[in-house]
Length: 64
Image 1: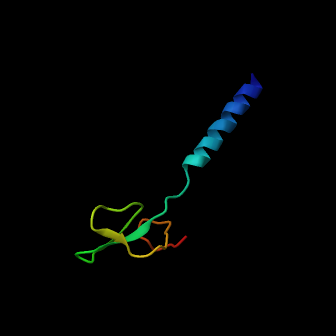
Image 2: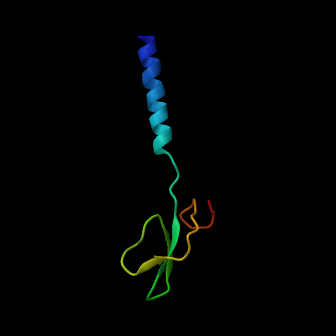
Image 3: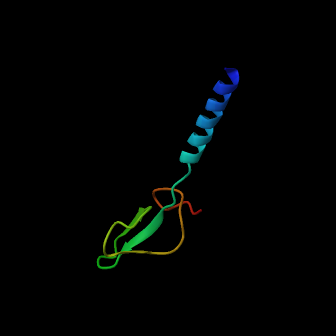
C-alpha cells in the first residue's frame, strides 16, 4: 500500500513538472502598420517575426 502511494505521488510530481515548462515568446511585427506585439504564436495574417530571438516573458524583455 505504501509503495503504491509513493508511486502515485512520484507520478503526479513528474507530470506537474512536465506541464510547468515556460513558454517561448516571439516579437511579431505587423507588415502593414508596423505595430509589434509579443506572443507565443503568430497573431494572424499579416504578422511576421521581427527576429528569431525567443523570450521567456510576455513583454519580450528576457531573452532565452
